[in-house]
Image (cartoon, rainbow, N blue to C red; front, side):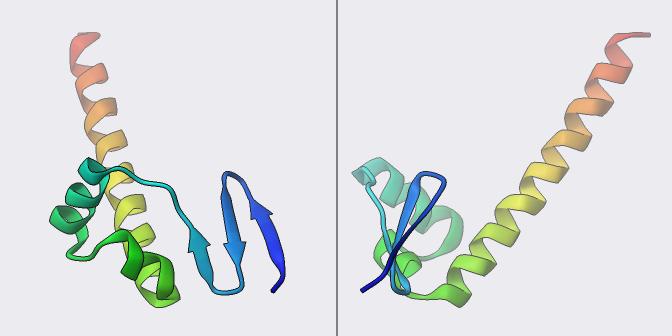
Length: 73
């Protein structure tokens, strides 16, 4: 089994070694309809979750920029 370090996540083969709390698990189920165990085991599902997170981040940045612009007027 080969280990690679990618930032703060350790990858063992195709499974992630994640450390999470019960509240994080609840939030994952609420936001993405799956728990961390399923997220860690399925590469395709991780990709989908991360794409959704990226899109949410981009939307939040646009909202923030709009609020900043309006506050400077």
